[in-house]
Image (cartoon, rainbow, N blue to C red):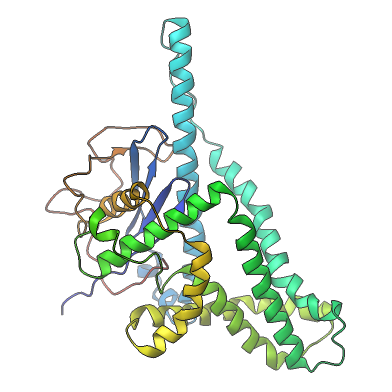
Length: 358
């Protein structure tokens, strides 16, 4: 039986792109000197050992946990790359002043913890802003005369406005706009690959910055599914309602993931296009048209991940780094636990069709 192709996914990171495959993930970051550095790391495929994690309505929440974990690891990596570059500059300045080498900087063992500590308050803010706050809005606007369905609908509208308002607010930050451009580069590159074309800069320019499996679409699907699940529960007192809203995140996320997955698998069917349309509108806020350098960075990430994508001849080989951002060898890929080379390939063949959120 022939094996089906893998549908790759990824995310934008600081000045770069992370791409994920079935057994590994790779990230490419462009340093301020123009050098593109990459890393490729294996993924512990726990779903092969625990098949129940691939069951419908379970795989969605597990996929979200994996996406959050890998997203944080790749974000920490991009942070380390740019920090290491700054430290390189400082070491060169010190060497120039002292006239001798000052040695390597200490390994940044704490950088991951610093990023996690900075993200935890943001996660708490997200739960409060997008889950608990909208659940209180109908009480604040004096909706006592509304039906329970009307209150739930008002909550859903408040949640959409909170999400859209937050995205619009942060989009004015220059650094966030560059992240959104890298998000668009990730989509265009994957669209080019899934169309069966050679992944080159010229071809990627012609493809859309939008993708039906985008996590941005997941947000809107989540809001709609949560509304449908909350409606039968009525409108209990706040001390019951707020815990219920938190509990219902799990089934709502599971159903929204299945809908998003369906849309990605059947993107040419009119019903699937209808399901993905709201998400594509939201992607107009979370993506921007990438420039050539950002498209190239996405190509570097995808080429480092899989032999399905060959690095174009007109693009110089990247530098390879460790997870702490320190350069290893200019032309030799570091050992990540997988065999490499023309015979083995960068990534073992997937045993089944999987789809990643883009």
